[in-house]
Length: 329
Length: 287
Image (cartoon, rainbow over all chains, first blue to last red; front, side, top):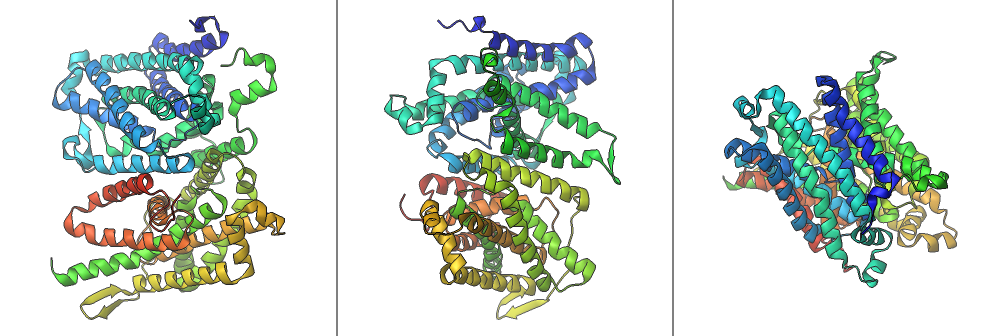
């Protein structure tokens, strides 16, 4: 039995996520909670995508599909069948996992850029299909009755309840991510990343390993989707399947360092802080406010990282300082 | 639904389809020569739209003259992007090139949104209608299709009959061998990328003569280019034209049989199926 609790790197990443999650709870502050929501969502999306992209080496532009499908299924269960939230969250995760399993069987045969293109296709197909699918409200989506929140002690109480759920999932996601990375299964995934043919030769059943990696990466986004759309009170195709959200997750992973546990967490935190700062800034460039240039600055920053530090912050630190390799997972 | 309706939809679809085809041709050329999927393709299509629109509406230039200028600017922009960004990541894993071109997309989109906002624009240009027997066709669309065919012909002449064109094909075929034969591969790659973006800009400029658009419109046409590129076979310029025609016909005919909003669903399903069944495309050889 591997003793992951003896590794300082595990405690470091866990401490960061717990501290981020607990801060708004101690403050009991609504604004801090909203920031917490976006940061924790980013952490879960980046960490789970990292299982496919960082560990296995398959770049997916369609990660948000799992968030969207899970969210839609959960909202449908709450709105039409009147199921309680925890059950809906569970079903959201399960349906995302099932979708990932079926998709994985089909498109994980494609390698490299072909896989990346196929995931864009899957995302757009899902978005346009749901926008036409009557049981899910077609283009207008699903809107919850306000009375739904009564069962959870009113809207305000429900928000905090959802927040606790999100914190729980975020903490679980980093433990999960660490556990996979240090498991034999994870080693198999990283072998596939380095050389898929060689992995096959040394006895890794690559189609199964890839499919399971894909399924495991899909569960948590599916559960989060339900929590977030429940919190918002409605879900629309454009929000649920926003391609840009997948790509933002990719950027976060690149920022922090792909294939590491800490990287996606730091990347998510850094990206969201930067975005928040830019969007609320009062600075002016000429006659235009700085926030109009949020996209330009993010793009420029990303370009610099890809051109000059392709292994991301954590990867760079690990290469630069050998002693940090023990601590930074 | 009568026959003349069907015929009009079909021909309209074909005319639009070739214009889509030329955008996809640029994407295909870039993929074929340097194995880069250019995620900044859409935003360059949008720049082409704004180029023609601005030359026409502010300087009063004839749109087709403006198109010529836009094509030259598109070529220069592509060469510039190649030397600043692509050249540095061309040998890196494909994730780097995907994200690098995506960051270019973000930068141009951000600047474009700041400069032009996202209000829809319309060039308001018209060449009247042309009657051909039972058909009534928009003049601008007819001219756009003609321009496309002209550009395709020119591209083929360039690739097969001129020395730089042959260099491009040699580099696409085997870069190391081409370098050993003394071909300056860096400059040839820059030229290929430039031609790719030039085709995107031309497609955008043509679309601007008959559709309204915003700086965000490029995305839709980029996704159509992916579908078309995969249909015809990534890396195969002529396949792009065929793919464009197929997509155009689907867009012309399908709305007669089902609600308009279902068309993209069919398109993307087709895209995934082709990727799975025959990733080399309809015209591609066996892998």
